[in-house]
Image 1 (cartoon, rainbow, N blue to C red):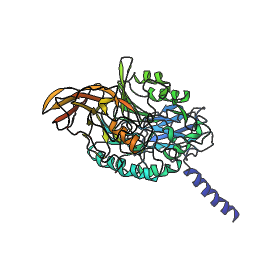
Image 2: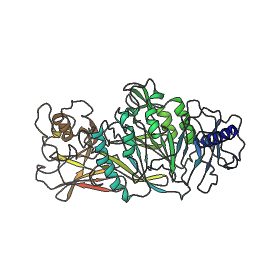
Image 3: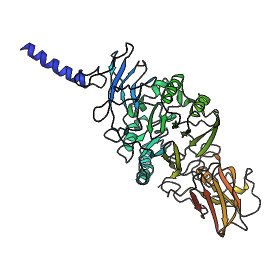
Image 4: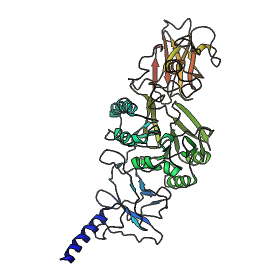
Length: 518
């Protein structure tokens, strides 16, 4: 009788172990490995499709090194002792796999202490998506349930409406998902679950646990919720690589950049990408010139590596204002998109510190090229790309500062008839024109200034400090002069982007409707 009991207990123990995701290989008759394992291999597995056929050429990684599956669908790795995950880079001819809540699921946690670990992955084949759309959402940065409610009811609601018109859509955040509030991780994941498009994630400086003793510990909350901090996936002839470019030192002390180990992983990841593909490098902290507040570590090395591909784009957030930065590297143009924030000026209003509306970006991709992109203002039509002002207008009472465009030193607009336009997504290939009574007056000239309509609201109405993060000067402002005073005149500001899209406004902004939130 005792022997029977032990046999039954042993049977259930074996069944339980075989279901553990990090268990050693299942019995040979279930999914046999047809490739001889190398003596050094400590992490391996089979990648198969929905018909249980092996998938060759899939890049699998532990976050430190990477390997491709062979013709038997087998990958082999020497697991790094610090590795917490094993994951794959979704091939272009396979679906983006998601969990029951439509969240991307391309990884498994490594919890086993066994020397040899087997982790299989199952993919679903599909036709290559040469045309697809990426939604980029920077800095939701929710610190409490009220801000979370605004993110759900404003940003996510807007995306759910807009995405209906786009093909093969995917979304990714660009960091600062929460605002030093680890208790909101579950709620933020739930907010982005079960949407019409899957949300990939990027870690930001405020997503690092502020009480952690070191960089490795500071990312654990994020990893428990979303998985690896560095990973990649492919759509069409485009390779998207997402990286943690925040090196945490102590509470609110960090530098922008990547570590030596991350650099080695990035080189391995991009070594698998054909040179005629486009690479999109997504991170939180901007590269720009590599200054004090930019991505510093491996700044030039990454740009040089990106320049080896047919086209490359960098997508970042962090600044809470909209800016476009063009890198010329080895004869190649690398376009850096620094996105305005979903939360704007930290949910204090519906605008960023530079007057850019709260919002997100939409990128339409065909093959290895972005064929159209725009910054979508939350709660507005997609054609809302300009805000225009009478340069002589005073915004609010002049209590502490002067809120008149024309009176500022950097503009110094003498005489009347001056119009100022904030064209937040403009770059050197945009054309900004001014019309009066249907006739073109001339091309508007680019200037750097503050948006005094936005500055007045943040500094006077909300009591924020001059020179703070709520008071920023940017270079996406344009000036032009009509005949006679602006008030009562028939004017139009017309902006044509690099793709030929034309945006117009004949409204001069004078009030603060909708600026305080919905």
